[in-house]
Image (cartoon, rainbow, N blue to C red; front, side, top):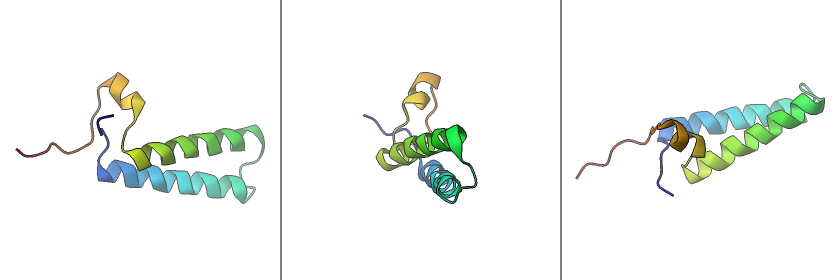
Length: 69
């Protein structure tokens, strides 16, 4: 897996995941919508930890800065 996420993207995804998890576990967003929110948060957290987003590959995005040779 080639990294395709930059640090800013990883930080934003992690923050979104933390906020989404807080909203679910505090009871602000209950039910099915809350479960969907937690699943999305888990995906965001996982992709930010491995610095790879499969959706970016399909769309052709790369937020990882280019390495200087």
